[in-house]
Image (tube, rainbow, N blue to C red):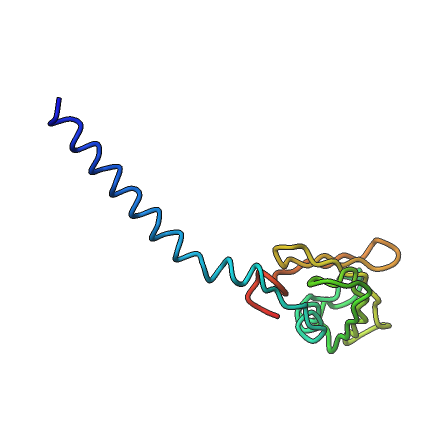
Length: 127
């Protein structure tokens, strides 16, 4: 009986030690989650400018420039208003939403032009 109980106790102690060690390794993650910094306009503008022009009939080139301004508060500052200039055609205005994971979804006022990207802001490693 003792030959069965002692190994089980040792396995339990080893599992506890591993769990405690893993928990301390996540302390930097917890700190970052508790001390989020607000998304910066320049970081979002850079990410949005990487998307190719989604308008039909154009050459789907990347943006030449983008500028974004927050319309909300908090860390994510949703929604955002972004003006994106492409090599051809008029600039496109997008309403942008950042998810808690940092992924970005944007749509123009007609709802026909969509862009998606990853990642910006809290939780993504970019501020």
